[in-house]
Image 1 (spheres, rainbow, N blue to C red):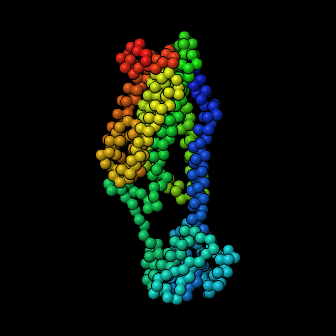
Image 2 (spheres, rainbow, N blue to C red):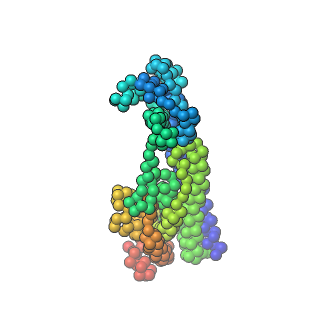
Image 3 (cartoon, rainbow, N blue to C red):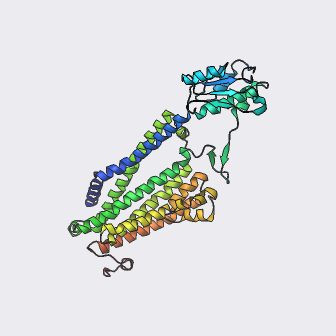
Length: 410
């Protein structure tokens, strides 16, 4: 088996040390860094902890009788509470805004109890947190005649829980969190592996055929050792990408959580959905790669395989084009069928897991079907390689491959 490992090591070195591979391995970190940077930029622009002024012409806040320490207890409910400063006149508040001592001020007119209208004045738009906390602060004082517990509860507002129709999935009111989307990200990572790994595998056989080194190799190594070594090398390349991306993603998540990007606050994982994604993604990877080997063994030149490779890409991406069906009806007949079929099941299950929990029988059935198809694809790839390894500039007929005959060039 020593020649097999030599082929694997050669295939690994030949592809990993290319400039194109370096670009691929850095593309994901750059995308992650850009996404986190944009998230941090948006979060920073939405949050401003500078004080906010209030001009109270109707006495809502000025005349409220709050127990000592009540405002401090209420402010403790915020991660970054905003300080509110009362100004006697609007002119004082305006000067504070112009001198950048406060980010904005709110004017409660004398007829507030009748109109319920509040005016906001600023030079630059204040943070969303300031506006939210102001109205909670106002609600706290409006409820001052009641008990402190009632006032704080009224100011806290309501907490909305979004639940899927089957009751199995909870979605935060602000939208899916990073942890909720983790299974989908795993699927996307494996999809990237399929594209990269299958592309390398397609060219791995055609290169030797185009430069006429195949017959030299076959004098010192068996076809099984040659194709097996190439498979091991390409698998190692793919998992190098996956491992590198995983480490970079974990470091990026840690940094994002430390700097306060809200999307990464909840990092709890639903291991059932993660396991379901892996159970389907692994045989899907083997299936796609084996089919690419078969295509690479049958075609005359590498450039001819590119249109065929795009067909595999569109098959895997098909669920995205009808994603509306997963959002509105995650357990519809179409969603279930796409979750069971090879090629489409990996992305379909990953998308459905965002909105619901895919039943275990569908995950196991899909994994079983893809495993059977993967074994059949490996068998087909071995026959295609055996019958087409010495054919230069000629295509191999599918009918001859399945029949096991050596002739039948087209």
